[in-house]
Amino acid sequence: MEQTDKNRALRKALTPEEPLRLSSNFSYLAMRRIQDEQRRAEQRQRLWAIMTMVAVTASGIAVIVYLFGHTLWTSLTDAMRRPEAVRLVLPTLFCLVFFALLNHLLSRRFSAK
Image 1 (cartoon, rainbow, N blue to C red):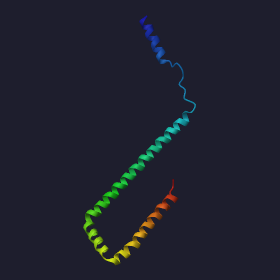
Image 2: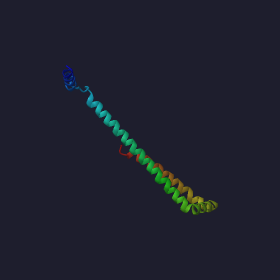
Image 3: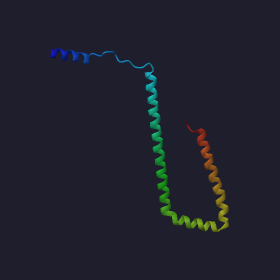
Image 4: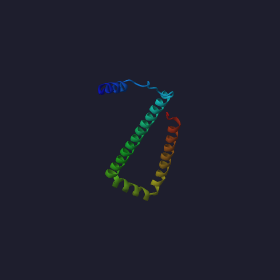
């Protein structure tokens, strides 16, 4: 009697009761999850790129300041004492700001999104 109960329990466990059915919008949900994962991967990659760029830039500036800091500081203070040097610095500064803004606007306008 005990053997037949075991056999019956094993047969019941091995035979599927109902075939498994997927929901009607399974493909839509699967594609949505895939797109969400791709978006998160792109955001992680963009974050790592920004962090790497900041680290490289900061280390480059630190190396320049370490190697040439004293020379740059003395050149800057000497140049500010002479009025003819200011006449050269202001147009140069204006051009740098202008081209930086132009670069920013053009890169936003023509970037591939």
